[in-house]
Image 1: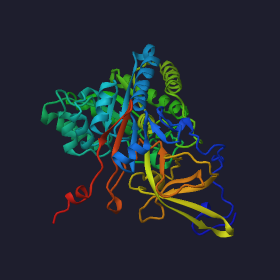
Image 2 (image 1 turned 60 degrees about the vertical axis):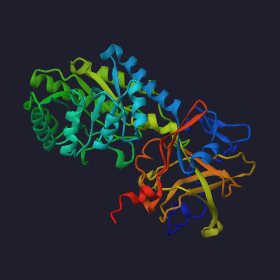
Image 3 (image 1 turned 90 degrees about the vertical axis):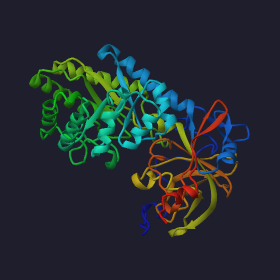
Image 4 (image 1 turned 30 degrees about the vertical axis):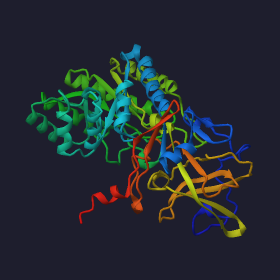
Amino acid sequence: MRAHEAGALHAEGYRGPTWLQLPHDVNALTPSLWAQNVGRSGDGVLQVAGVPVTDLAAKFGTPAYVVDEADFRWRAKEFAKTYDEIFGDLCGGADVYYAGKAFLCTEVARWIRDDGLNLDVCSGGELAVAMRAELPGERIGMHGNNKSLAELEAAVSYGSHGVGRIVVDSFDEIERLARTAARLGRVARVMVRVTVGVEAHTHEFIATAHEDQKFGFSLAGGDAAEAVRRVLAHAPHLELVGLHSHIGSQIFDTAGFEVSARRMVRLHAEVSREHGIEVPELDLGGGFGIAYTSEHDPLTPKNLAVGMAEIVERECRIGGVAVPRISIEPGRAIAGPSTFTLYEVGTVKRVRLDGGAQRRYIAVDGGMSDNIRTALYDADYSCSLASRSSSAAPVLSRVVGKHCESGDIVVKDEFLPGDVTPGDLIAVPGTGAYCRALSSQYNHAPRPPVVAVRDGEARLLIRRETIADLLALDVV
């Protein structure tokens, strides 16, 4: 393969990544990539919960994030129910924390409240959403490596007793939180975030438990044990309720959790012996992976729970300690698969490459402002023609956005029908996590709406931004 100044993907002979196979039927949907209630009608139009995407585009415009509400809520309840059952005999059950950073709005926070999950927040803004949704304080965890004084005050002051746990991340924060709790006359419930030194097999930007990064207290260096001592020294203003770890995101097996659990249980036992206390909770994190393309094969909630329960039971038995209450954080695994992004095609262009090869560029009316993950993480996505079926032969295509960046790519490689034309609709699955949350107004592009569909009815969760919204903060 000859090199090309634009990169290897442009070189002669490139036919897509090895996992991307020429489809037998370009109209067929890969079930693992789509929410449960997404399918095609008789005329080939994509529909969700009985509503054609052509109707959604006509009513709400494009681009738009489209949520299969029943799928989202089923995934949430499945995680809560499964982990509670699998860990029931070990420690009375397990608590599941939904990651607000993946996607959060008031209505989603209400779903989490009503469906029995807890909520992780990592900013004052996310905490404000939880408050607006009237989520009980004991079901909220507060993350963040640099929480401001205002954020700590809000967490400690939330409701009648503050949030259920504040995950402390530095010695400075321990002191700041202790002063805040004392001044407000409250007891802040604290978990110590531990960096366990496990390298998750994921992108380096979302691997969070190796030593050289910003999160947590090092286990190997003794900082974690010292953090526990300092929290206990600030009693009664601080109450140690648990130890916390998180090894990364987009993880597809439980191997990393085995090492992490072993080290966390060891610390748990050391704390018990040194201080004569039983730390009540152990959070093993999560960050479970989802299928963005046919390359990915994530585990089911039950398989994940069974694997983690076996690890925890064994390590606690070896360590000679009782199994503490377990909590986990599925991350994108709830929100991610439930949503797709709907775009309209604006232009179709064939670009001649070295050696006579060609690439087809399909430009849509969104891009890196509504999905930065391809540019930020080199993430892979799939997509399908959504507004009709096609009998044309599949053609390797690249779906790009409308922004003034050559890296503004939505889907790097996908086989789409050869007759895709301006005005067609394209749907990209798996965009429920971190797409709206990381969205921007780059090039002054208004952010898309979030539309929930259930039982043949569609409604807005978040409206589309307008030009007036873009100009509203300008001081003239």
